[in-house]
Length: 467
Image (cartoon, rainbow, N blue to C red):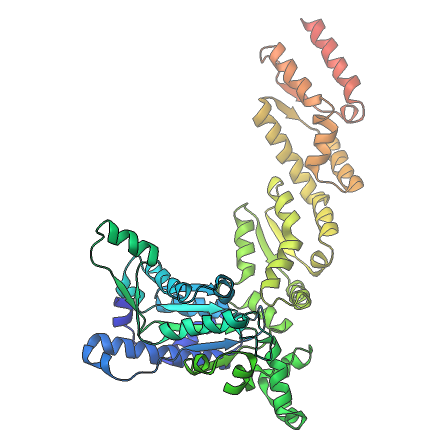
């Protein structure tokens, strides 16, 4: 509970922290910063003065609306990480599928105890995040939610625990077994200070609001900064204009909406936002890929034009920030496979690589500089594995480099096909074993590249003569 007892953050400080990880969405970050500070300041005061717990207090439970991939989940996780409180995430569809009234809603509260290291007291100050809440809208809602009667009942379940109730730390089965075997006093989790955050895409509700505001409001919408960017990409959203009746018409129960006083919309991400996520966010996905390559001793750098193109392609995926991972993984997957086995120590991500990664990889692998370094790398591996020493004159190295360009293959593949697959290396190993190590230095000639079998036969005859 020390994090709560010592909570002294101000809304601006919270937003400054969120700015390090969350790009844009300033309105949402301001609203959420105030709600968090209000809630945990009150929780801290109640810990300092228990007499305040009896006073009337309306929790600032939060409802976040916004399209898929706009960063709703990441925003909530970042807030919980900053606060250092237990955090549990669940999808609303999980509850609508079971149809069990009351049981599952309480289970998600019990999971807070696990996140709190088994402490029911600490769990009582955690955050419960329920995503895809629009999927439990009642069938009467204009969105045609999948929840139906069950969705309405699931909403009622959450009504019971959103305010101030005691939830058993054990589910009904655990409680029964504990009672049978004398499990001792039963613990419970108070939800008085558990903050509930719900989110959903509310795709159908966008049309509901559009019909409500009418064409006479288009001038206002065009001037709204929240829509200026997305208008250019035909992703205009009206969710920031949502009112209580819009959520009710969409299928959320009036009592349910009434328990969630803080509502905020997150807009769709455009290509400029996604570019900023790649370059400005403190834990950018680009940094993850750079760390992946760093594990192989390769430094990954990126040109601005390349990252701009990645952002543009991500927009076309229509899955928001998640698409950045998809695009980068698709572009770099074969580089991750091939380059760790080469002498490459630096990779520059260019726009051409993004457009045609296969060709870019081939160009890199057969480039003279990398090919020449990889010849040394290949020879070193042969000597380490086969315990023989191999000499390759400069003219032979030049020939291998030329073959790399001709075949558009790496030096490793070229040398394997010319010397390993043809039996040259295994022949050297046999000669070393037959001479008990007295012959361990072998010089590779151009003739050996062109006629490996004939050359190895000459070596064998000379060995017989020596014997």
